[in-house]
Length: 109
Image (tube, rainbow, N blue to C red; front, side, top):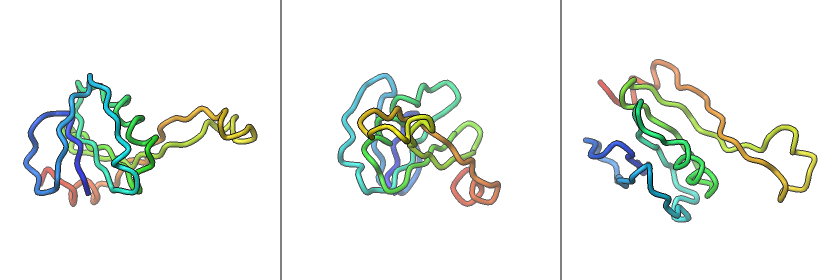
């Protein structure tokens, strides 16, 4: 899993990309990879998550380093758009919060 830190240095053994949440990046290299975004309470992470999700990583998660809680992230079409041509779909992020044991296994031990 590749980590994308929006909170500066993190002490993790995984390969980590350090990004500024106020900067727009191109993320085509994430396609097919497992990605976890590290964020915090005061970090504006949704634009970065949407940009990464649009490139279709094989797995995307967000980790709240302040609360030590994670969520799986899904990039889904708006339900009202599924009967339209795909080029007209509006996309949004959807989240599945991790269970307590998943949070414990991931970090903040």
